[in-house]
Image (tube, rainbow, N blue to C red; front, side, top):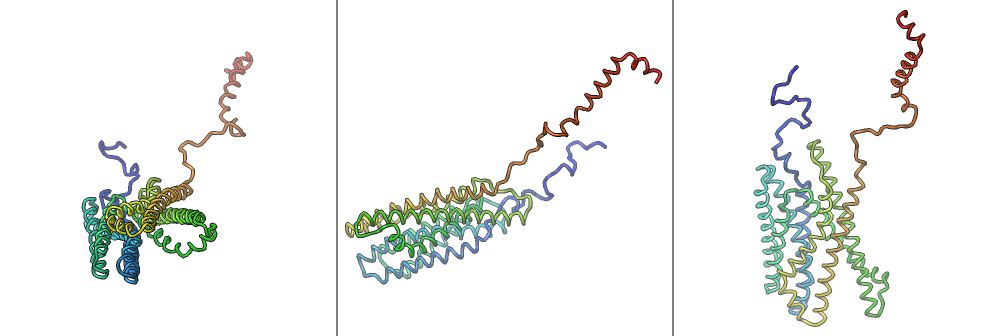
Length: 362
């Protein structure tokens, strides 16, 4: 039976039947994006409410400005993560309804980030005191949400979802860790001297960064593992994410923290300068807090990336080989020599004249 030219038999095809250009084959959505969007929006609302309560309860003037500068990093980080999560959920919706278009998804992500930013800025202007610091907080928050939406417009959605989930967990951990600061200060030898307080503060900050990085890496790995299982249930032949995706997902929360610091120093520069001019102690506090935030972001970046990569490496098995190794020892090794023994026996018969003469008779 001959083959027709230009056609391959059906048995030789390893790909499942169907169109490879369908959206499900090209685009892998970020699972749980809608839940992440609700959680991050709730976290942003909680940060805005706590900041408003702190500013409102403080005295007017100097204390309100100082508290606004202290609360700005938490609001910006929450807006950055909320913008990214909302853009992910909106991108999943667009991909299901209009197909896989990277341009459409990116434009939709920017639009979702703008909606979150405008809603947050409107809430700040309506509920906060109408001052110059209020406008700075509102504008910087809106910019952070838009930038977060742009980050979520990446081509591969599951790693971005892992970054958002891990970043949200890290932000919640930082707030919860504040309750353990005083016992840790005593544990690390904080005393009556200034030097002991500084040393204890450094160790507390390093402990927070280390545990936060470990949590970020584990959350990123867990999210990608969950996304992989969901993708396999939808399509058993779905391609698996390689190690760079886990590396980026683990490092993503640290990158978002550093990006938030850039937004704070650019958009909230006037507020930070105003708070630093209040007194020498405020200037030292703002400088120290800025340095601590940068160090924390770097620690979370490297520890999270390393944790996610190690967790991914532990799931890998040995690489299968096509050729099985042949053994030269044991009883099976003598089996291939049997033709040679037959040849030797034939040569010995030919060497015997009686055997040669008896051959025709037989």
